[in-house]
Length: 233
Image 1 (cartoon, rainbow, N blue to C red):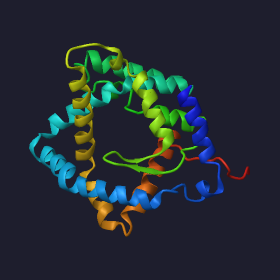
Image 2: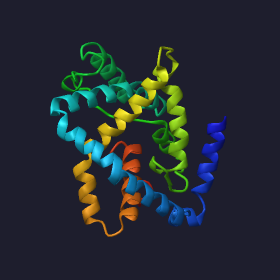
Image 3: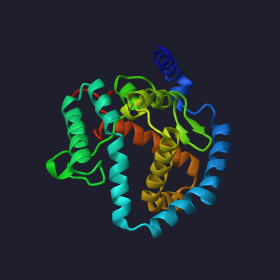
Image 4: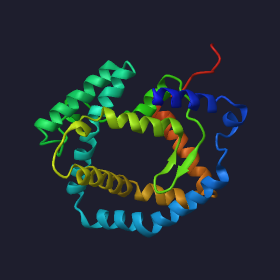
């Protein structure tokens, strides 16, 4: 009920003329947080990711990426079903079954060669698919770009993850280790792209904001262009 109420508030936020025009009412504060995050990234996250990229063999990094991606597939499956994309949901659960068993808990990617390519879905995308507005653009300390719709979606995804219902020793350590490894994996795979963006951007904050929105919009539409609002020829 809290998520539904929050989603309704998000949709309301996105309907005002000011929000539609820029959707960044907290820009001065967001820029300060972005500056803090960027400085911390350059001093901590980037060196760690660069060290990991240079020390770990390509094969190790690829297999770790497969393993981490496999853990998210139950959440992807649930959101595929919620969106009514049953064929994609079948691919997600089939990929999870194949890679978890024959791929040794996801360390090896055998499903791609069997016609089940990797794709990701989350509840933020599901809400966007049903027309829930993103709400005001935010930059969160340490976490980076976000919008209220995706923040609410993240809480729902936590309860869609079956691993969250398992009780085992050192569960807290496992959860944080998984998050840390996912961050390092993601950061190390985008080092060159992020550096190129920094070199070519006149306003890195505005570029990051635009790329984040474009990325989320593409994810909501599964890579297909948004044709809503175009004239009917």
